Amino acid sequence: MDNPQELSLASRAVFYSPEESTQSISYPIFMSANYQYDGDAYDQVVEGARRSVNIYSRCGNPNEYKLDDQMALISGATDALAVASGMAAVSHAVLGLLRVGDHIVVDLTTYSSTHEFFDHRIQDFGIEVTFVDSADVEAVRAAIRPETKAVYVETIANPTMKVAPLRAITELAHERGIVVICDNTFASPIVCRPHEHGVDIVLESATKFIGGHNDAVGGIISINSEILPADWLEQIRWNTLTKLGGALSPFNAWLLLRGIQTLPLRVERMTENAGRLVEWLEAHPKVRRVYYPGHPSHPQYDAAREQLDSPGAMLAFSVASEEEAAQVCKSLKLASFAASLGGVRTVTQLPATMAFLDIPEEERQQMGVTQGMIRVSAGIEKIDDLIADFAQALGD
Ligand SMILES: *Cc1c(COP(=O)(O)O)cnc(C)c1O
Image 1 (cartoon, protein in one colour):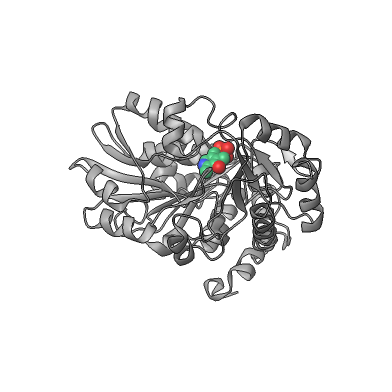
Image 2 (cartoon, protein in one colour):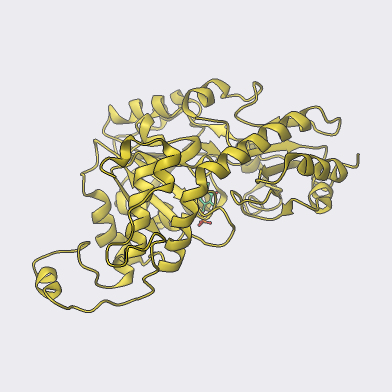
C-alpha cells in the first residue's frame, strides 16, 4: 500500500504490511527485553542510531513501534508513542513538556486520577495549575498567564459528557505559543481526531476503546503540532520515557494493535446502542436526566455536532438517589457493574461513589458529578437484550 493515508478510517485501521522477515499477517510478538548488538548494530548505536536499532525493550520494541505507526495513521498524527497506561501517557506528556516555574490551565472535569495528578502531585515538581471550565473559552483566556505553557482538556469529559470547544481553545492558545493537550479516551479516534481541530498533543487510554476487550492496559501519546519540534515525541521517548520507565510490554502492544483492527466496527455498533439506550432511558419515568453529546439537551450540543463524527458510546443518566442508582447497577445482569469503559461489554459505574469518591463533595458538585448519576459505556450486545436488562434493573 503506497499511501494508506488516502484510505478511509475503517480500511486504515484494518490494514498493515506483513512483518518483513516472516511475511506473517498477524504481526508476531517480540517478547524480548534485550537485543544483541550483532552485525553493525553496535557501530550504528555508537553513531547515534536509536529507533532503527533494537536495544532494550524499555526504550522501545518492535510491537510498540508497530502500534505507534498504526495509531498515528488513524489519529491524523505525525508521530505516536505507546506507553504502559493511560496515566503514563498523561504523566509522561505533561512532565515531558513542563518545567519548574511553568503554569498549566486544566479543565476542572477530567478523569479522576488525572484530576488528582494535577491537584496534588504536579506542584511537587514546581508546576502551577489553574482549573477552569474549558467549555467557557473566556474562562480559559482569563486563566492564561505569561508562564502558561499548556492547556489541558478532554474531548468528552467524564461523567457529564462535557465537550470542549477544541477549535476555539487551540486558536486562543496558539496565538500565545501555548500547547494544547487533549485526552481523547472517551471519544476514541473513531468519534474524534483532535489533531484535525488543531490540538498539538492527543492522549488516549488505549485500555478502553482501542484495546476494547477489558484485557490490556496501555496508553498513547500522539502529536501533530506547529509549536512543538517535529522530533518532540522522540525526545520524550529518550529523555522522559526511558527515565520514568512507563514502557509498554510487547504483549500488550500486540493486543492493542489487534484491537485497532476492529475499533471502527465496535465503536459504530456501540454508538448505535448508546443512541437507542438514550432514547429508551429518556422516556423512562425513573430517569431524571440523560447526559449524551448526541442529545439536543446537551449543553455543548452544537460543538459536539461540529467536532464529533458521531456522539459515541459513552452516556450517563440520573435517578432519584445514589442508593437507587446503586440498586440499578447491582440488578443489571447482562451489563457489568465495574470501573472501566470502552470494552465490548456494556459497563455501568457510579461516578459519585466510585471514580470521584476521593474528591471532596464541593469540588464534585462543581464538576457536575452528582448523587444518583449512572455512567454507561455501551457495548456491542444486541440492543433488545440490553434494553430488557435495564428495564428489569429499573424495576419495570
Ligand atoms: C481510564 C482513563 C485514563 C487512565 O487510563 P489507564 O489506562 O487506566 O491508566 C485517562 N483518561 C481517561 C479519560 C480515562 O478514561
